[in-house]
Length: 112
Length: 114
Image (cartoon, rainbow over all chains, first blue to last red; front, side):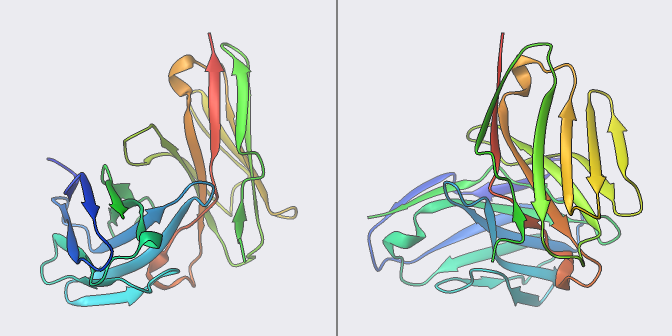
């Protein structure tokens, strides 16, 4: 039981490049979330999903897109990376009746 | 609009003493509160939570207190241990929050000195 896994762990992009971050969970959780963590700002919600095939915007969605084609996977895409998207990205999941979210180990992204 | 605020970026305590981490919120619709602990290069891990129908929840060395009238919660760690050194985030959610999203505070870096 791996819990929540994220791929890749590190990535360096040039401005304008695109990439996709993959989140996978093996706990059969309905809800999944993408956050970014920046110094002094805590975790801010980018997008979330309440079930397969559904997504919704969070607090800071601009510049990102997401897809949830399978219940266990939640993809975060950057179509044209900008230096302001340099951050640590965390994925989380939770089971519907509960409030606790389980987090992945994070992806450290640097955009030059 | 910072709905959940942790005003102390850092806290340093001696091993064996009590650590008290504080958190304030502004949204009166929040009805569930959580504390997460985060070590460097790892994801946050759930520590303890409290529902708004309670004013205290205890789990071993960790106790969370909720003061609804003051919109304030605190995490007490007794006794503090060096392994408790980490960043602590408080988070809140409400029944009316779409997707039961969590709103996080900025975090407090706790350092427990041997």
